[in-house]
Image (cartoon, rainbow, N blue to C red; front, side, top):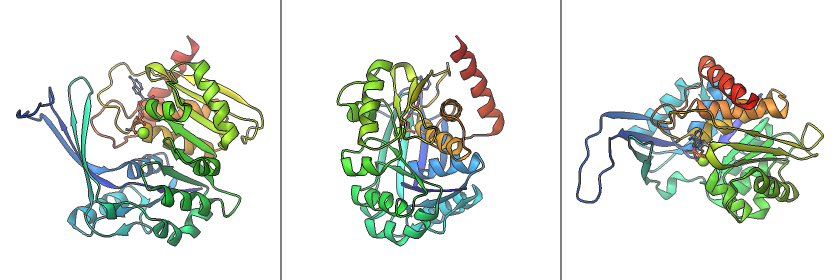
Length: 312
Ligand SMILES: Nc1ncnc2c1ncn2[C@@H]1O[C@H](COP(=O)(O)OP(=O)(O)O)[C@@H](O)[C@H]1O
Ligand SMILES: [Mg+2]
């Protein structure tokens, strides 16, 4: 099984401070991490860590940083043969405070974004994948081209992370996953509760996807699937958040998507897929920065906490 992730690749620099500085102030960082980042790369790293064959479609700069990111991705066992090299590498600086509050300062040069032509050049690989994973941070034309290429053959599961304003794009998707803000954009109102989540998911099912994953209050996630899902009947489950000490939520959504896709490709039942998705997210909350660290031990530990919380 193979997954193609189309999305952002960036150099992440994560600086941990006690308190973020205001204007005209400075703060000393007590922890500094530089890593392969960007949502596309984070999702690909997470999938590779979960044992999935994964290729990345994205852009790095024609510079030393870009070369270093490609090396890191290869070490992470990601197929980078579809990565484009041009311009300057995207850079994201995260300032993380002691309460887990983050601020991002990012430089995303226009040439670091995927174009529809970039995607069409990789169309064959997208159509041959078992799943194609897209994040809404890329231009709509590129995302639509990717979803269309994937649907050129009846095979790939198309997974969207985010809230498309474009109904056509949503109609191409099989699975959509949204954080709190994105869930509100999709629903047209704050979601928060299971009841409002189910209402929003019903509308999403009518518009295309057979699985909607929506963030509820307190870090819980609703997974709602329709009768058009591979499981044949409609249903839903709410998986609560379990981690008590959150260092940084950055990348947790990316890991959630990866955990979900890995489980779907292994023909998991929907509740198992949901538990594994949240376990992957949860395992990414305990360290600074978005780079996942999904060892079997880390995932198993979170799964057992989730199972305890779901029994209560
Ligand atoms: N306090 C918390 N405890 C557990 N999980 C949380 C908490 N706050 C947020 N989450 C989870 O973190 C994830 C953040 O997702 P998202 O905002 O998409 O992150 P990113 O885009 O940086 O990957 C969501 O899955 C949410 O359920
Ligand atoms: Mg997200």
